[in-house]
Amino acid sequence: MKVTIVDYNSGNISSVINSFKEVAKDKVSIEVTADLNKIKSSDKLVLPGQGSFKSCVDALNKINGLTETLSEFAINNKKPLLGICVGLQMFADIGYEETETKGLGWISGKVSKIDNQNGKYKLPHIGWNQINIVKQSKIFENIENNSHMYFVHSYEFIPEDKNVISATTDYSSNIVCSVEKENIFGTQFHPEKSDKMGLKVIENFINI
Amino acid sequence: MLKNRIIPCLDVKNGRVVKGINFVDLKDAGDPVEQAKIYSDGGADEICFLDITASNENRDTIYDVVERTSKKCFVPLTVGGGVRSIEDINKLLNCGADKVSINTAAVENPKVVLESSKKFGSQCIVVAIDAKKNGDKWEIFTHGGRNNSGLDALEYVKKMEDNGAGELLVTSMDRDGTQIGYDVELMNNIASKVNIPLIASGGVGNLDHLVDGIKLGNASAVLAASIFHYGKHSVKEAKEYLDSKGIPVRI
Image 1 (cartoon, each protein chain N blue to C red):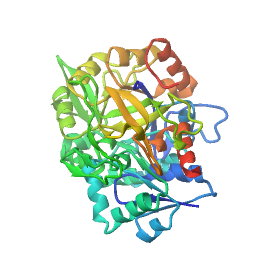
Image 2: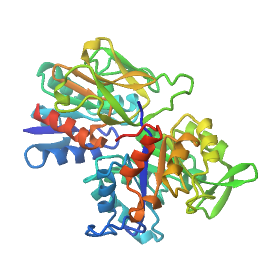
Image 3: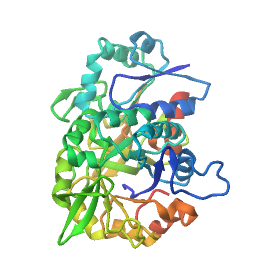
């Protein structure tokens, strides 16, 4: 099996690479590339994302044919894809960070700034928070409800169809922190930085 | 609920730990990677390396340390010390650091913070300050506490927030190394001035000081070095103690 981490210059992805390699050992091959043919021939894709919604979308669009290839992979061929942090946020139709930016539109919804309730909540939401699993998801196999995961973000994904939500976390309000729609998975938290529980999420994704 | 973080800090010089945990079963007590692994296995919420390498020719040793650590520890890793430029930040991130802390360079050239947070995202830019009380205000010192910039700390942190810093790492120079506790007045003043999380540093001598940093200083995270060294306290003990005082921690 080949899992590809999409390397589209979205910022720092070393930790994602290290964690997937740690979990995969020698059983699964982990490729890091933006090569369209290599992406097409992969069994699973990981779409990381750091920085702003706009900077990530811009970086995707800079690589000719990449968004089309990703859509073909996830929407037409229905092969498993995991978006992490802004990687998840880009599933939305639209994001409002920096300026209004069109997303991939795979899961209807928008990405807006977390309501900090007039400064009551610090932003970014940085640190370990518990996840409330609201729907059994393949990536939460053997993950206990209320497990801690590591977060760092100021914007949240608000999907139109609440049925795609697999977990939320409590920060100012119930923030969507994980989604599953058929073959498309996403986590707002960083499994690659969430210690043993995070590595378990990665293992679950690899084992789908 | 978001938990308060405990961050052990390791001073690294020429690729070796200067002060560290002195456990008999350590194969190599001077290896930062082994020490970081002990901390992360013990429940540290993040790991911080402070590179205090003085000479330029040994500056590259930190990159190798970061690279090896990031392959073993799967909690966030912050690296600071001697970070001067966008290029330095880029190199550290590529080696596997999750956040980079910038101190002197941010004072001398605030654009570094603005540009790096735009380029890499605020989530990985930590502005570190060394502050010392002077009359009724705190002043920012640079170059490892040797030079007084004369800048007012409260004004400076606000500017850094506006420039895109994701977090502040605040060290009280009056308290650093004293083991008499954080300067909670400084911490609280800064925490109420900005909307980004504050990491308190400097002066921890016992576990109550960690409690004070959070309860009185309003810090989101507490950083400590020496109390975790030589096995005085483990990270686990610290967390259990905070938990017993009603502070939310990840256990």
